[in-house]
Amino acid sequence: MCAITHIFVLMLENRSFDSVFGLANLSGQSPDGTPTSANGLLVKAVTNVGRGGTVYRLREGSPYFLNFDPGHEFTDSCVQLCGPAVASTSAVQKDTLVLGAGGYPPLAPDWSKTGFAATYEDVNGIIADAFSAFTPDQLPVLTFLASQFGVCDNWFASVPGPTWPNRFFAVAGTSSGLDHTPSSAQVLEAVALNEPIFTFANGTVFSKLPPSDWLIVRGDVAQTRCIYGMQNQRSRFSTMENFIAQVSDGSLLERFIFIEPEYDALNDFRNGNSMHPAGDVRRGEALVKSLYDAISASKFWPNSLFLITFDEHGGFFDHVRSPPAVPPGAQENPRLKEHNFSFDRLGVRVPALVISPHVPPGTIDHTLYDHTSLLKTVDKAFRLGGALNLTARVRAANDFTKMLALTTARADVPLCPSPVAIGDERPSSTGAPRSKHPFLPLYARG
Image (cartoon, rainbow, N blue to C red; front, top):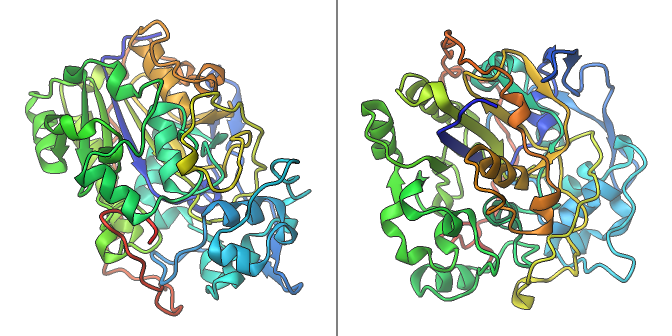
């Protein structure tokens, strides 16, 4: 493979593959050159049945932001994947499903019998807003980058559940047993008091790489600060503005850069650029463009890899069934486990873009990936000899270096279009305002 000296990772928030690319009609070739198309929605009449038998049809064209948050906790996700019968409305609302000896329930036999619409009903959400997919003209930045570089259409969240465990899997290959959103108290203890709440016995990418090799770029409050020991690594965190300046002037010294967007959690995500459904996705598109423009214009570009993915599906529909998974086999913290989940099932499919001058235009990779594929790829690209094979899940994961099929960097640097202007409105959600939650200091539960 080509020599990769810099890996940039942007992990956005809460979108399924079908939500972002289901209607994009992406076509191109697989990494070996075989003509292929992405597994989307264009030839599929997608319906979902609610708890009372109401049949809903997926809407083409999503609101740029919602006034409610589609459920994506563990219980929500289980109902969404397996069907409404696995948990009651009350269990969904309170996230109280505890798995029995039989483990994770059987998946729904087809997408029409999944429980996405049921979970929207359970929280009185506007179903037409949530049960929808963006058209490609709504997301010109992501759609353009997918066509000009590489897209993975078989990349899944590591856990069928919310943000926190999935983000931990991306950097540690495990969540140490966390299968839900932690409490505000736990987050405060971890950040303010440096308490050992979120510990990883086998380490993380940040503990395995020399401190001089990595940087966390934060839009506001970085979720990675909650990892035990990160309070002692404050010099390893940078603002978005400083990072872009360093990339642009060539002074960046680190080679693994993990980028967290602006969540705006204290304001219920309304003004963030993470692509969380409460915030306007056009701000997320603007962030992606600014990062791509800076990286692709820099001296680092010829030997760089820029991964864009999403932590989990955010409650949004995807028609591809969640595969079984290899459990991490790592030490768990019993304080962090509520649902008796064995981590033997992946979450919902999410978008993933692999951007590099070594990726041929229109590359579409159908290989099975999850967030631990990031660790496997960093290990291989940086020739670390297995140092990042932190858990059994990582060891079983596929790396995506085969997408870097060009040994010589492309001479062209595709010019990324601008996002849709925020003044150019499409309908936004008209649902009732979402209830307030105590987001302290991040989006933890009260």
